Image 1 (cartoon, each protein chain N blue to C red):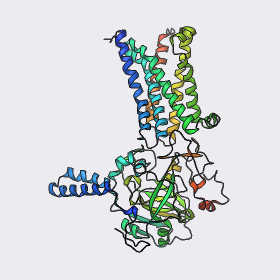
Image 2: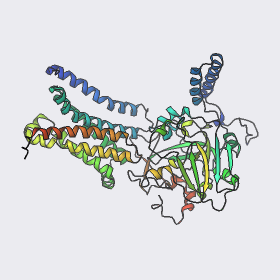
Image 3: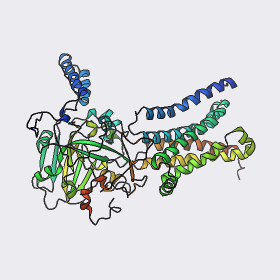
Image 4: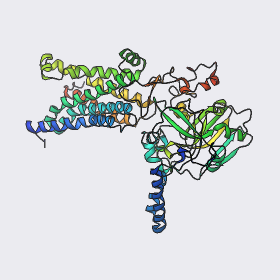
Length: 207
Length: 325
């Protein structure tokens, strides 16, 4: 049985998710301000990166979840979780520019091109920018639904890039448990789309 | 307990010998629980006590300050030095060792010194503590990950021990092996490194007076998570070179395999001298975050060549330190 929510109920769900999604950020602010992080720069960098990845997975899970459950209202949450992906990626990027380079953009760019693992993360972040910028209703109208949809398929590239960034980061310590887990989640979510896409096409007649 | 005569001739404890109150009260609690163990004698109490023992293991360890080899930089708070550790035998997160290392049994403990030596030795921890006068040395510690601390260690130059075993002419390197006991070390289940943890130094590095065989820090016995009961401190190298909870020291003729170099040879070299000019493949080593000091609003501290221990530079004369990173 599909669980259907009224617009008002969806509104409350949105508020709840918005508040919950800010909890990790609030923890970072509080932990830094109160001095409870031993290494605040590392805590902010690591935690923001992790949450960007979690929200990326949640964003990619919205459509499959909607299809499996028939809860069509889930699509109304997609923009918000997508924007939280961008938000945590932005915090992660600012942490890098701030803590690693103290806002020296030239030094940051040298670092980016020098290190493949950072380059990949940086590209993933850059690709998120147009998606965040075109997330408003006005932009959807301006671009037209079809073109907007094509643009937003960039997320299918961003997912694997983010996983590669995470994988390389953990590779130095041979610590692959999490990269494997999140790699599998993203791969499954993307494979579902390929599966649905292939199945939707009319099957060619067998010779 | 060691009491040494003060230079002024009066038997007074050094300031670092005065037991902090939390340890003093912790000890009381421990004694109370010991009494309860005797009275109740139940297994649960014993387990509780084992934990209590780990927490109160910070018995004081008297040492003479070696000012000449100490930095006067601000010391890292004890809670950070004892709470933010890389000791993968007890877990991968920085807080894991402090949470898990209570299972490490630091007594009885023996260290075997063998290999290319005329007089191989097996020493228990008490003999090690008495082998040479204990010194307190305040060293900078630079982690390969880009953070640093300033820690008052207690120990003596490793050369004191190595001289006892009389290295032969073939002894070119020294290999240090950390305990690997899955019963005491839950982290061994992970395949992050090929256990046991092995580290190594060239013999001249091992004999350098700065190289410290370390039994304590902050005037106390080493907390388990910091590599109790005996570890190495090589202050001009990245922290991972300083093996913890050592059970074997072997003098060898060839460069030994070392755990991190085995695991990621491109990232962690055998030498791993602190060097701001040689980047880690994934990050720059030009600067560092001083734990407890570097905040959000000032740039990081510049990392110094050999972590500021210029007196070791002569060990590497003529060597290409980019190649032998």
